[in-house]
Amino acid sequence: MPYTPTLAWKPLDGAEEAQLVAAHAARMERYAAFLRIPSVSALPEHAADCRAAAEWLASELRRIGAQRVEVSETGGHPIVVAERIEDPALPTIVIYGHYDVQPGDPLDLWKTSPFEPIVRDGRMLGRGSADDKGQILIHLAALEAMLTVRGAAPVNVRYVFEGEEESSSVNLEAWMRAHPDRCTGDAVIISDSGFFDGNVPALTVGLRGITYLQVDVRASDVDLHSGSYGGSVINPANALADMIASLHDTQRRVTVPGFYDDVTPLSDKDRAAFAALPFDQVAYLAGIGANTLYGEEGYSSVERRGGRPTLDVNGIWGGFTGDGSKTIIPAHAHAKISCRLVTDQDPEKIYAAVEAALRAAAPAGLQVEVTNLGNGHAFLTPLGDPYLDAAAAALTATFGREPLYIREGGSIPIAALFQRELKLPVVLLGFTPPDDNAHAPNESMDLGNFEGGIRTVIRALDAIAALD
Ligand SMILES: [Zn+2]
Image (cartoon, rainbow, N blue to C red; front, side):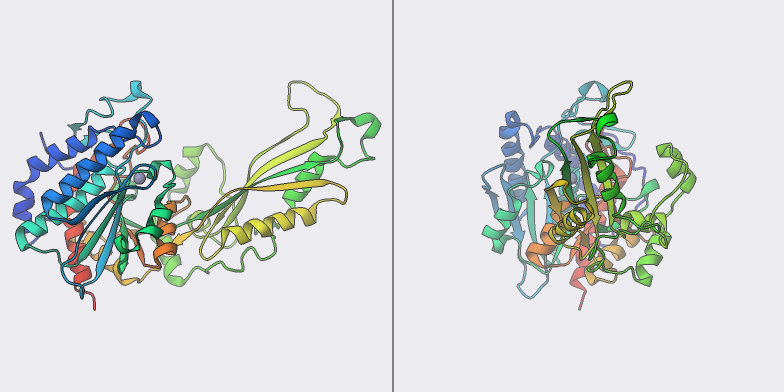
């Protein structure tokens, strides 16, 4: 297959480089073979394919010299575990990836069939090429090169490759609790994220958590005539609007008592990392068709979206919403509200605080029902963490520029799960290009990211071995 990397990376100084070059063609064959297995975790008809992908991965791990390789049952799709323990005195790194993928459809928008991968323009095109099979293979290629050349890895590694990430990792937490010996270590590397715009190397250091709720308010059994009753009874829609409006002040700060109590303030270092992120306000607004930026006073847009908590209405309805007019006092009104959270906010505590604030703001006599629709913890790797610094040094040595430190507004629930369950530093060292189309048609991996990723992992593990 042709190979034209689009991203420059620096070869390794050691003998692994020759091994990696010699093994390139075979590596690409295996990459394609892995992508051909349609391991779509969300679709029951692909359960056998998920298992086949797990077995394929296990046999690869055995081939390259990993130890204690196991396809471990979860009740759902299995988790592939393996390790390479060189010396108990060395640091042990837990490495996470997932072999399951999103469904392929809509098929007509693909340049190739999603499960018939091809290399085109220096990219591997196919479902899972970036998210996340390609990133798993980066780790395997790195281990293979080190074991072939040195006969050992520089640190101990434990691999945890799950098959349900695209299905909310439903069995991962219970599995981790049941198999503590397979995921203990000194730090976790999660490779399921990527580079920044323009393919600048990046480390995702923060992800926001969430609490999601629905509020239902009711004042009467039926809709009432607004001429006969208007002004003399509670209008639930008016009341709900008032309740929601009371949750922010004029500086766009959330007024819910206790909301900011556990928020870790942004340090000078944090603010410098935010300021280093390229942010094109004009392009940002044009991209969404908006006229102006908005948000909490005292913070920049990148800080607001990555480093500060929020409270937003996601949906609101009630009363008459058809064409024309209908003069009623609605019997009930509803809203869905979510809060994006930062460390160390506890989603359950914030949910309870928002519920209490909504109830306190409701007029007497209005029936208020609040339901929690989901919670997720925020995640943060503190700048200056030695494992993060080792990863940064490896990216810098490989790609010739220092990585950006990103805090994403969204979430990768497993990052918080690993941090909370294992109480270990978690480094999100991901290699997908910013235009990878993960979850969309024509998902692809830049082979410069892929090959550079392998060199980065080797350099990162060497850098971790050199930590005091
Ligand atoms: Zn993923």
